Length: 525
Image 1 (cartoon, rainbow, N blue to C red):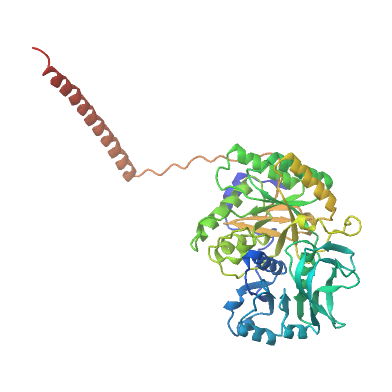
Image 2 (cartoon, rainbow, N blue to C red):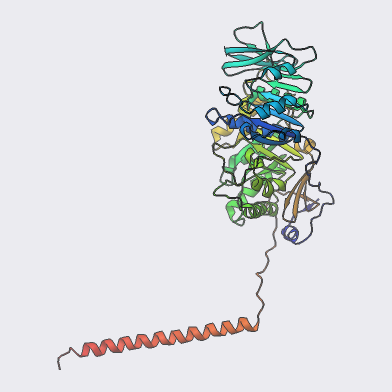
């Protein structure tokens, strides 16, 4: 292990990429699953776009390539290009009015999933079950084999399945509060067909929905949640971040930090304090995700500017021994060709967070790519009402995809105390990057940053993070080469300066003399 230094980072800008011990960039396999996600409406008034983004992120976490399309844009025969299809109903009051899609879906033999209301008779027949409509009910969701349960929000209407075949696989049960002796399946899989009566973007319902989707598409896994402190910036209360990381380290809790940064002013004392706290985070078992910048007035031609900005972020971090293990961004960045190519593609590991209220695209193409590992970022608050008789055991919750439970960076001492209480109460067995995180790699120009089993790599060489600021090498400014043209213009400039100075002096003298002559004309003789 040796200390990273400025000369190593500067050399990386002119040398070819070294990958002796760093992991190779993971490119999406050409034969990876291709799934078409078709939705009836975004239904922004009821936050339907959040459900679309949730399905996109779940499939990306499952290493499934997903193409998203509104039902009205579907053209006959397109489904033949995909290995699976998901139908998402966001606005059940209107029918999914595309006969070509319904006809192709009925003939489709690959895995297909229906989410939401308006399950057709053909879909129910393929599930070998009967449809039952329930109205004005509140349900408790639970998995019998785990004893975990969560009370769900009130449902005005719901379509459930009854008379399931013996070979049906059920993931979770819905128990009406008014009928404790009756229960209905939540996630249902029969052969290559699946059904979810509704989709929640958080909580235990999200967990079971993810398990259903993962099981249907044959890529189910078992993951512990990654505790993530989100919305960290160089302007956050760094003293509180330092205290929080020290408390997590003392409790033996591994964690991650999602932080933005700046591309300039790295020599300022404020930035040095920021980098110092992040180095302490790294030395206390935490890992860093670089958060993408806030989007302003972007266009399809903004790619080179974004690429340059991300490179400056990463290089300046590396110069200060801050080595991100991945890039974090809002989910919609993976649906945009400019953002995806010039930002997310730099890393083989990402953290996909919920979308903001307003999304600004540069070139939306809805052609998401996949990564070596993609964490689904979700607020830890949505799991705080999950119950298991007593407190959840140290085994934590069993997620089917890599999942990051996020907590907002505290901004005052009272917020810090609240965060630590909530973490202590959750009492999970958290995801440990030093043991469970696969080899990571980020490219910044010709520089590479890697991480594996607690060791950071810079351009293929293992490097050690120090708490204090790394010693840097100050380079002398480059003196421009002298030529006859340089000397000519320099001499010409001096001559012109002297000429105009003399001219100005003469004009000033004439003004003084002229003023005196003018005044003497009116003096009495």
